[in-house]
Amino acid sequence: MTGREKTWTDVIAVSELEPRDATPVTLGARELAVFDAKEGIFVTLARCTHGAANLCDGHFDGTYIECPLHQGLFDVRTGAPKAAPARVPLRLFETRVCDGMVQILI
Image (cartoon, rainbow, N blue to C red; front, side, top):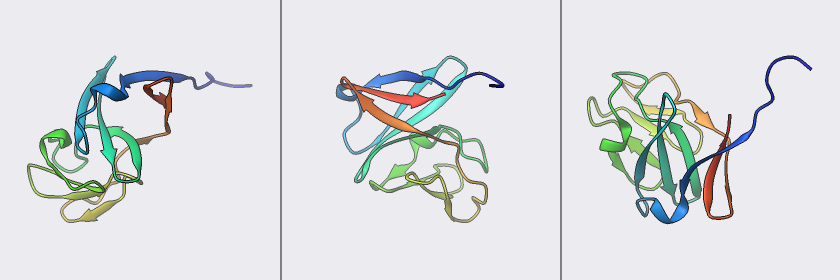
């Protein structure tokens, strides 16, 4: 086997999430956005891929996050950009809930 094996890492307790919103979390050197979405919990890097604004400051409708700087739009379920000027997808982490904790695979 080559490289490091990925492991599940605790990010935040589910009880600490902003209900139906984006919650900012710092994990080591990573700034994350944890989304309590209509279809579950999703975790991405927190910075917009266009202007580097913190997405947790943007409008979240339960599926899409709008960047507060230039109004680029991303689907938090896939990381896919949905409106200009955003063109590069968000880094999306594999996510699960275990024993009341949101975890990501890193």
